[in-house]
Length: 485
Image (cartoon, rainbow, N blue to C red; front, top):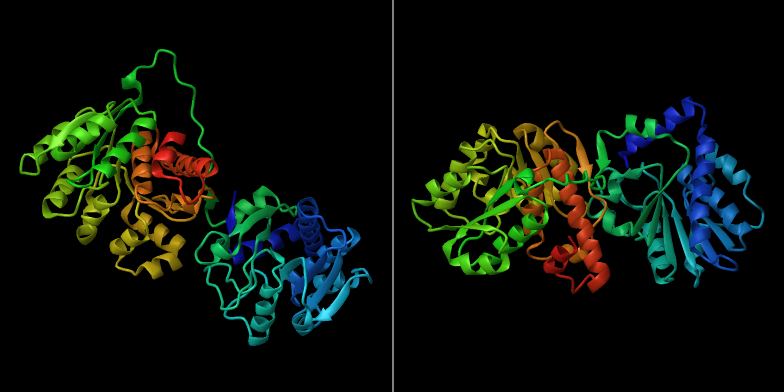
């Protein structure tokens, strides 16, 4: 699936118009597609529907929708927020609206005490800045009606490309967007106000969308080839995971289990010697490499690289001068696909130039706080520009960058971006990142980096969604997710 900016969507519509699908046809298609969806989802007969309409093309989509919902037996009111429509297409759609649809000025909604469904079509992808005081007052009143809210393209008050949300924005239960996802459906904080987001086809071809997507697509489902009948453990590689300091055995256990479940042939766990019993019991399939915490660890780790096909550094490793030295030693002496997670990232944040010297394919999997340490920015600045920061970092250092969070962003060294569309808030628990790191490192041992990284993110989220379905979003655990792998 393609993800478009406001400019990209505008260009896609122009291209479609140039190639024979007029702007008015696109508007009709959008309104009808929204209607088709709502007709399937809602019992509309005699339902009180209020459509909030601006004076642009977003309002025009609402006029088309109003006709269809009225034909289904709904009592439809179109509330005009900025007077009569101003664009040619919206004027035409307004003129074609049935006389049975009630038209009112938006301020009249302040007298309304009941509504079953509200459709937000005030502003579209071109909105910038803040809602006006009148708009805020009316939307605040609508919130009190407790109606189900559908947003057309995006909730009014949301900036399409930045995800910025104006005070007073009406949160949607469901957002019906057209042709492609937009940045705001994926970026915080706006993604939290979009509710369920559904992409509806309006006749713009895949070719046109691809031309205008700025190299941003969704993470595809993981697909693996059937295994050869005569395979053996050496056929699927070995992962070396340097994880778990004293007191952090859990991170080592979770990442180790995830690596084992990835399908890799052999897993070696290099961890603090105090973790030996916990790891031996929890991960009996893995080879244990106890670390003493002294000068001998460097030699032990270099020896453990022998025969490995991928390397994981970080989960629960701790932050210390010795840990940083061991990480630098490994990075300088490996050409294996290498994943830096958690303390693997934190220990090199102050000496980040080392990344440019690494000869191995490199993957970093920071959460926003770790990303902020890597770039010197605040977490707020990082969250406000997830696409831009991930892309620029990946290009500058020649790495794969997996910026975790709701709708995880993956940036390739060549600047391509992928966004994950699955997962849920129940995954926001300690250990979830360790699971992703172990899974990804295991897949790196027997897959090309791009396939391993994208597959790991998709599988991790799918396991999270299945755990939610079985145990509930609040009480699901990372162990439940591991079981779903």
